[in-house]
Each structure stands twice: as C-alpha cells, then as structure tokens.
Length: 282
Image (tube, rainbow, N blue to C red; front, side, top):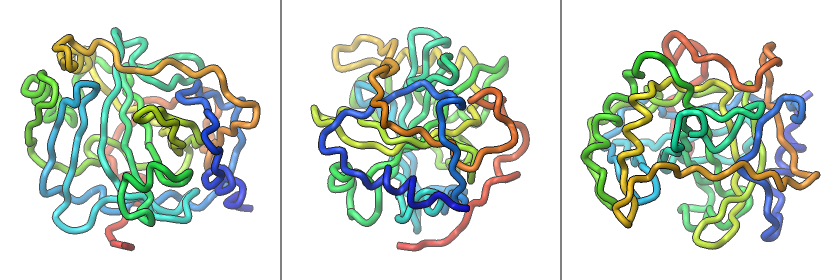
C-alpha cells in the first residue's frame, strides 16, 4: 500500500510562519516508514553546457546550465516536477563537525545541498514563498583516506575564488559524477530555513549514502573568505532541538539495513542502481 496522501499533506501544508526544526538529528527509531513510488531523476547524467563556481561570501555555489533540458526530479513523494537550481556546500572548523544534519548523533565532514524549485511556480522567487516550492536534497561527506577524484575540478578551482563575490568557469561534467541519485531508502521532512529574515518552508530530502572526501580536500574549503576577508572556518547551522512534537520525519522505501541511519561509502559506478531518465516533462 502506498502512503502518497500522508506525505503530500506534510509537503503541501502551509504552516503560516511557524518554525519547523532544521537541521535535525536523523535517527531511524524516530521515523515513520512510508512506501511510495520511486523517486525519478531526469537529465542528471547529461553533460552541462556551462558550470560556474562562485564564492558568495558565505558558501561556495556550483551553478549549472544545460544545452537543452534542465535536470529535475519527479515522482516519489512529489506530484510536481522540481527543477535543479544550484549546489552549495557547508563545512566546519574540523572534519568531525562539518555537516549541518547529524546521523544518530554524529556529524560528518561536510554537507552538500542540491537546491530544487517547483516548476509550476515558474521561478525561484515565487517558489520560495510557497509551502511546496523548494526541495533541498542533502548529501553528507564522509572521510576517506584517499581523495575523491570526482571532486578534483571543484577542489582545484577553490584557490581561484578565495575572495568574496568571485567566480570561475570550470570544465562541465555530469553532476552525477558528484552526487549519487537514489530512488528509495532516503529520509524526508519539512523544516524551515531563514532566508533574508523570513522563515521559509523547505522540503528536506536526505540521502543515506554519503560521498567520500579526504581531509586535504575538506581543508581547501576553509580558505574561502567572507565579506570581511576573513576565512570561512565554519558555515554550518547548529542542530535545532526545538522540534515540534507534530513534526514528522519519514523513511521512504527503506532497504533491508536498519541499524545505522547513515550507510557506508558506495563502490561501483553511479549508474549501477538508480533510475535516471532522459526526457523533458516541462
């Protein structure tokens, strides 16, 4: 039996400025299991036309432009299409506290946010105001002994954008080289994020599978400078412990592994499992 109506009530409910906890600690024992259609990813394996890395003075943003159809996600818990907007990164003063979300009480080395906006609202300025307007897909980085070669282009370009408001074009490559699409076995909750002094509702979708990264690669992000030309040592929010008792956290289409909330680093090509489609529904 599919639980589509239950998750859509959470996604579409307007909380009228009420603060919902985010980021949070993710613990399987506190989640409700839902069985839904598979989450489907479109055009993420296509090579972009342009890729740009920017130091905003707060984080590093990866902007992407495709030659034809933009990447987007659909199905799963969603009635609409959510179009890819950008990727940005969070890190901490050391590799033990570099992620915003924690898993079973433990933080990881870094965190990646892939921001998506509901295409029915036409643009992100409209979408951010709506309760079902914004999806942020979360991946945490887990330390490994060797560098992650899929991150080389980004890591090597960081020294070119150490100053705030600086940008650099980088060689385009499919973003599935960086993040690993998933169809099931993920977490979902609705939380708020303060954007320009407004509490905006965000649908958080969290991968159980981490991305590998070395200590040396993480350290390069701490050379990025803010508007005062000070190095950004930490740009993570703290865990929000003020969760409402009614705030629901879902485990969507779980796998057989139910001991730890965060799984081990993957092995093998990114296309070994997830369903990725090439088509345009807009």
